[in-house]
Length: 334
Ligand code: BMA
Image (cartoon, rainbow, N blue to C red; front, top):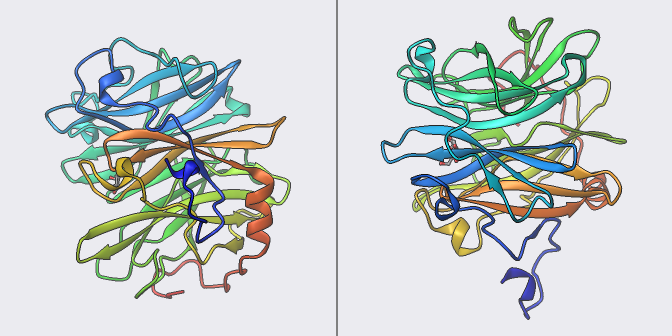
């Protein structure tokens, strides 16, 4: 395994893959499933709760709850799908629901789920809420297609909720990460580009997207995002870090030039979609400062990597502060 390698590492690794990886596969599922991956995560009481994307043999996805005391093993998985597409009342879910990001929002006493609703007109962003992971209430679609990779912040900014998301513009100008604001989680505006996909040879050229929801730290909102490099052998999904200002999350304080996690091991390199690490959830142990990143491997299984928050922040302090851009246009490139 990676951690037991005898050759010295070429780069210092911030995230360490868990020895039990992949921690969940379709073989662990209590009912027939093709693949399980891209799970949202949160801590509730003494449990880690995952909302796992499960793809069936039609190719459609639903979401299923898995709970564990240690966040690694002995997962208690709902015996049937927990959150299923509802195409009769929600046509936007006719091809499934995917990639949930979970944010506990104190002032609603609810976990807000931002997920991709896969409509026949393309993927869009929908929101739902739950406080027990048994019953879910939909707020409905909030961003039209094509848009995905969304998560809401856990608090309001000057009385407005904030959400990060990733629209895909027409043309060839790149898929950038945006932020928007809302008084009620239903009506969204003040749309601004948070940061651009880079271009050319960069690892995050052309397409970027938020990973898990922003995590509050003493130095800013911690962001993990994926960048997609299109190669002759297919797309490579790798991960980078960024830090946003605590008071004004439209301000990007730092952004890593290098990726910090990339497909390397067989369960990341080979699967339904080769060469993908795709996190939708993380948790933090406030006592130890350990961050647990839950990520899909090759669109087939679920894996875990851990890092120390202090190491991530130390690394980010060495990263450049991005140039200021006109955030309301998508035309400028970084
Ligand atoms: C993205 C999303 C993810 C998926 C990734 C790689 O666009 O659809 O669900 O893991 O592509 O296939």
